[in-house]
Image (cartoon, rainbow, N blue to C red; front, side, top):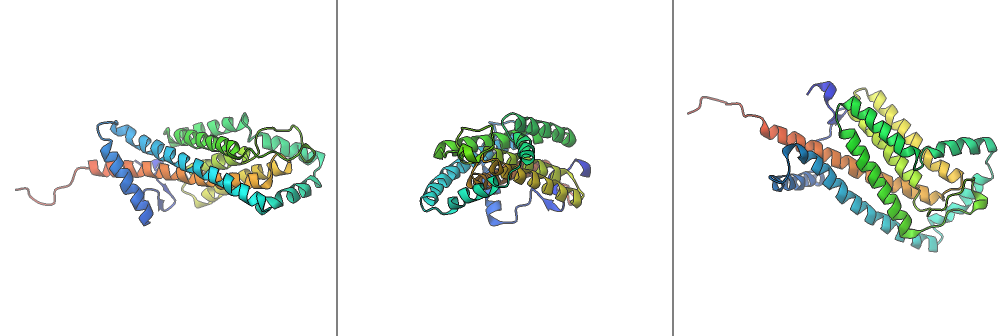
Length: 279
C-alpha cells in the first residue's frame, strides 16, 4: 500500500493505535471474538463483520441513552430547568425574523429533511468511495445514517414532545414529535462523518482543519435553523447534537477496530525472516 492509498491514519495519528487501557481492552475483546469466528466467516469479511457488530452494539447502547435522556428531560421539564430557556429563546428569535431571512433559512433547513439529506449522504459517500478507491465510505455512511435515523425515531417515540405552537413557527408546519431534532442529529452525523473520511485521506493539516470547520459550521447552522423557524425547541437541538456526537464516536470506533483487525491479521500473515542458520 502506497502512502497515497493509506487511510488508516489522520496526520501523525495512527488509527490502529490504542494507547489507553480501555482502548486496549476493547481491542483484546474484539480479537478474541475474531478468533472465535474462524470457520464461520470468510477472512476478507472479518473487518466488515467487526464494524457491523460494533455499530449494532453501539446503536443499542445509544438507543438506551436516548430513552434515558428522555427520562432526564421529563425530570428537568417538571422543575423548569434547561427546558425553561426554550420559550424565552424562541420568543427572542421570533421577534427578529424577517421575510428575506425566513426564506433563506427555510431553503437551507430543507437540505436536512428526509428528501435531500439522503441524497447528500449518498452523493458524499460515492464521491469519497471513488477517491478512496474502496467501498469503506459507502459502508460507513450507510451505517452512520441508518443509526442516526433509528435514534431519531426512538427519541421521538420515547417522549412524544409537542412542537412549538404555530404562532411561533414559520410555515410549513411540522407535526411529528419534536424531541430530538432529526434534522440536527442526522446532519451532525453525516457532515462530521464526511469530514472524518476526508481527514483520513488528506495529508495537509490545513485542509483537514478546513474540512472539520466547514462540517461543524454546516451542522450547527442546520440545528440553529430549526430553532429560528420555530420547528423545534432549543433543547431538541441540543440533545440532537449530543446524541449525534455519541453515535459518531461509536461509528469512528467501529471503523478503527476494523482497521486494527485488518492490520493485525496482515502482520500475523507475514512470513518471519530467519535470523540465523537453521539446524
